[in-house]
Amino acid sequence: MKVQVVVGLEIHVQLSTQTKLFCGCPVRFAAPPNSLVCPVCLGLPGALPVLNKKAVDYAILAAMALNCQIASFTKWDRKGYYYPDLPKNYQISQYDLPLGKAGFIEVQGDDGGIKQVRIRRVHLEEDAGKNLHAGGAYSCVDLNRAGTPLLEIVTEPDITSAAQARALAVELQRIVRYLGVSEADMQKGHMRFEPNVNLRIETDGQAFRTPIVEIKNLNSFRALEASIRYEADRQVQEFLESGQVMTSGNKTTRGWDDVRQVTVLQRQKEEAEDYRYFPDPDLVPVVINTSWLDQIKALLPELPLRRQIRFVQQYGLSEYDAGVLTSDRSCADLFDKAVEAGGRPKRVCNLLTQVGLRVANERGCSVGDLGLSPVNLATLASMIEEGKVNATSGVRILEQMIATGQDPMTLARSMDLLQIADSSRLESIIDQVLSMQQKAVQEACSEGKKAQKAFNFLVGQVMQATKGQANPTVIAEMIRKRLGGA
Amino acid sequence: MDNLIDKALVRKVASLARLELSEQEVKEFTGQLCAILEYFHKINLLDTEGIEPLAHCLPITNRLREDQIQPGLDPGQALKNAPDRDGDLFKVPPILEEGLGP
Image (cartoon, rainbow over all chains, first blue to last red; front, side):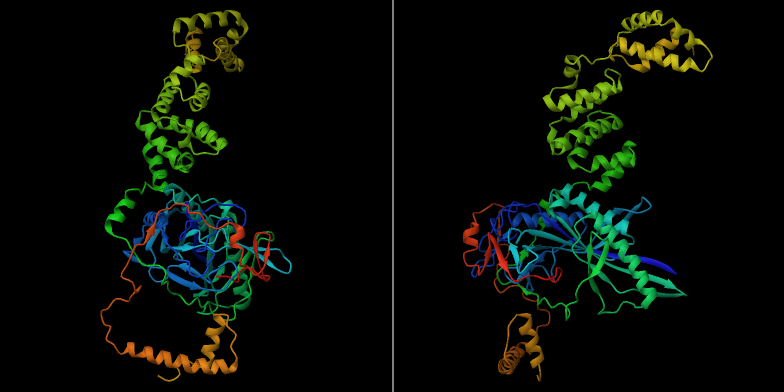
């Protein structure tokens, strides 16, 4: 029996606008309940929505990055359903004319190559409020979130493993952060996933498809991957037991129990969904002309995965390093500029990953906010490369560059970290050390096992005598010559 | 044009709209809605070949606003007409099961 899992993803991404999609209320996390509301997002009679241009700009940019066709004419529809978190009893969404369609996202495949997953549609809609279940005789509703702009992204069922679904979600997070259209903070519920999962099973020369299961409202990468993995196993068992196959009416909905790590069948609605979509008369259509598209297109950066691959191919960085550098756009930008300014790629990369990202992380900001100039970074990389300072001193200098904004040469001087380049001064220090360490000199000259150890000891002693201000490779070379070795 | 609307459909639409109708009302509305739809049927007699569906009745597009915060209501005002409240939260009948939303 051959089993292939088939997954399509529906993803909601919260856009990082200042205000809601159809009113001027702030979008903010963890504000006091019902403090970010107005007649529009409360759904009070007579209130009229007005579209936030920024949300449309962001949606177009994201749809472009997902290689979608952008609609020249798009409109707003009401999706009707009753739930306490939805004050108008309809959600403003886009039904038949979504903002973007027929695109694709590139994801690193299981084999390391690039895999394309087709995007069916991308559209804008408003979020609902939040139901709080007291667990008792009533529930509570906070409408601060109601009206927050969401981008809904629907993929075709091109995903063929739980790990790939996760990789796609992570890649999408990196893309929307790159574009600056979403903070994509999982802790704040900025990304929510609903995978549709079923299996293609081949057995005895026959092919079957198991009934589709939609897993609702997952808000972490871990839950996304684990729930798909669980669901695939469960569907194999169910197929073996019941032989049930997919029909047009037997799709079911399951929730993810994070504690027990299982999916749970949700109570089925008595009849099929009937959202009674119809055009919203309160909102006029949006026409997106070429000049608007061109303005947005100019903002489209090189996408992170493409950049990551370029860093490997162009600069010989490892996959890992390239991945770390491109995780933060400002970091990758700084890297590109510092390399352009003459820094050796690997050295610049090390400085950024070992110091830049660490300090940015400690400060809770991005690397771009550290105020590092590409030229200074390139200069520091070259100073290390040329042996003017050693790598350890380089780290300390970079920390000070971030703290003080001074250039690396000034700092190296004031911190007394410049390596002794004057060979006659080094010669005399080596003379002193060698005359004081006769025993080690003898051992180093011997053929015995201790020779290398003694040699390293001598190098260490010289380093100590120079207070670390010499290049160990240079010292080793000088000692080797002195000892008459090869 | 028979049976465009029957009682079952009226009951379904009423339940989707959370309306409770008496048997008498179901009968009454079935007739009324049939008459309305029949009237609309006249539109179907027009030749609409090659005509784009109308998305909006106003010849206006792109009413947009800048992404700037505007003052809203404070929680006291927001909850003023609420039938019931728990602190600054709207209080509603218990939602027994998650996931019955969309």
